[in-house]
Image (tube, rainbow over all chains, first blue to last red):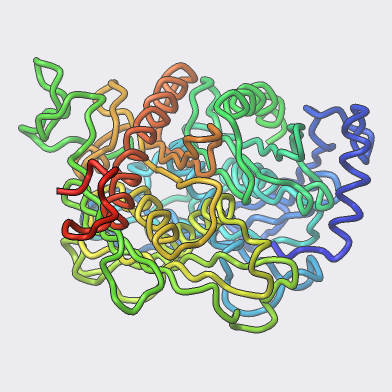
Length: 256
Length: 256
């Protein structure tokens, strides 16, 4: 993430407030911003959702086509996740092929869906070794005010939950709802100085030392994790974020 | 991970609690590190870890290209992780893919944490990690080698970063997954750790873990990093020991 020239000034301000137990927008350290999810927002997609997480605005569209399975998983559908940080969303995003931040975002959201076994991929097999459903989860960032990881994750889960496999269009029988088995939800926290804050805004994110995203399933098990940023976490801090994720994730899940 | 069924005849943990390659759960694969193996590079390291073979080279501090990336206050640590096309069973298409870009990003971040970047404003410190032969755990091997190469280049650092993964196979928490364990295991937790300060600078996770299993795995990985750290230090000591025949070695027991 490119450094804002104001970052140093903002950091002083943010840290000063944090030491008094206050976040810039008045939230508690373990409080997410308001979440609003519009399901089925894009009619041309097989499934979709638009998520407002505070001012962060993300659309995820799921598209499906018939294609070949990977040789090592002949009886499973294929998941492909892609993220576009389009210049519309922030002055820090540039057009062109996806850079490392976009790739990391897509891969972390992908990991949550894949490792959390959100979709029963075996039910996306049409004919083993020949034909399976290929599922594209495309993440479009519309407005960037921090914490794209969680906004994209909840949009993806919400989109998967209302997706319908377009079997009729592809001449493969009747349409059926996408078989969603689990709902892995990620919660991201950042570390600023000594403080751990969940769901960072853009300003909090650019001044943060490090970031940790933890995805957990509805049974409380952990399925994916990613640390980012140049700072560090202690073992205890990692475990603290794990607990936060499990606790706050349940709330988020009920909204998808 | 998690989804792939185990082929017939393979037992990830046998009756005696031993793993596929005969190791105990907390046993690392044999690790050997050599510092200063390349002539042209400013610093380098070669690492063999089980069947992994990894070369790391450091160039810099040198002028930062592209120029707009320059930071007037500090150096940029830029890691480029690359897998040779012949490093895996099925030929890998040459050039950066999304996986290698993500690994490059998190490795750069982990290394930036230990380098005194403010000593070298406007410069770039380029770290090239080349995986010659891959057998699971290459991001940990790459990070471990890269920090030795940085030290070999004489770059001032607060410590080396040591890196190792823990994971879950057949419901048992183990260290340093091998290839079969990576393919058919249930979870993987790569960790990058600074032994001197106890900071975690790289952390990922995928698979399915309870909180207790994660806590155990993280503890095992941290402990392993401390052991790996000794191998790193030993490599540097061997590199900078004055060879026998010189007169300065009187108080150096390492010299034979």
